[in-house]
Image (cartoon, rainbow, N blue to C red; front, side, top):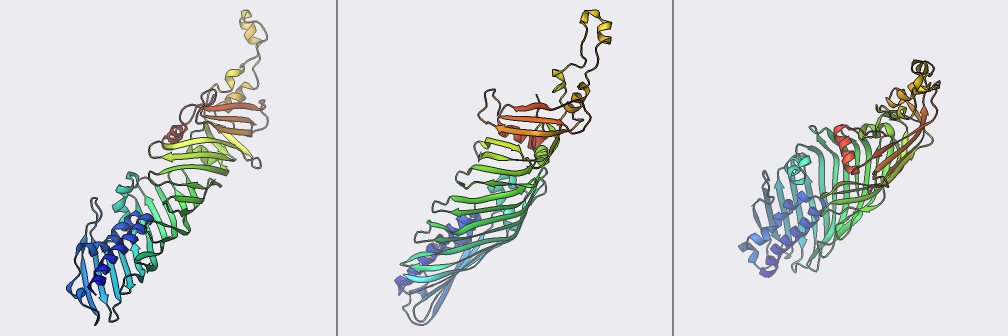
Length: 443
């Protein structure tokens, strides 16, 4: 049955192509592992495969393939074993190996090649080996990062009417990614998903939500934990994020459902902020405060694109009322004291020394100076943060209103109110504070 056997080699190529499509969508670096199926196009069927149905016959093809085009890319060693059984059924074993990667696919099909089964028996990738190779291609920021864990791919399905369909499951267990030079680490990574594809291998989707968890996230300026992302992939290969939340600064940030385009990559998401510790916000962002205690809550729009970078949208933050807030200003001479006299002038100035002798000190002046220089803490009665990226009537992109009174009893200063104004792109201001520790001026 020469025609059927010839078609078997073509089927090997088709299966490899279909599996390559699925693997590529899951993890881009899986594609070379499947390309070994091209052997069906690279070589003519061996002589034994031309024989009519009869005794069990077997043969093997193999070779190497330089599938990835970047410096240091490994060669893929592939091998295909084709066996024709006594009942004319065809049995194929497809193998592929590279440093830190291994794949084994089994295919059993009837003589017509219209019906059969396939099983991805083994699919493994070692992130410790592959991340250093791929990091420069994915992002320059990943160069120097190291990874660990076990990545595994499993799948099975049927061949119906000469078309391949089935299910593939991907899992990354005990994962971690660290960058010692940049000072960040992602620990306790777990990633799992199940996908199906139909008669057209390019049309596939999630069986159940893709689930990503990261136990802890640490950087030089902040930490977070218990990141959870659940997403589905539709037939357009667009991740639909159904749930995303993370614990940070003693509170939680949760995203409303959104779509995450991959080509080109971009992000537009609405965030809900719950009970975030103000002390961590002050340490991370330029707020004009030396230190703060208490929690804030609110909502914020956030965007990102490769072309525009980080984009801060409209938002609002307010004081969590059930927890006291105390803050201390960064030194801002004249913030409060410039609007009040140091002495009360009871006599006209033309009296000279007599007028100065008769001018008693303002008892609140020294207390105001202590507040504006950050020596005296303030107990906050109300706090409001408004973000207006397009600019308000005064051209401010952020505006912080604070009403407070001295935290210590015995001062002669009652309630004080002041504002922090930001002019200029919010993304630049936040990046300036995060990277350089800059602070804003109070007015």
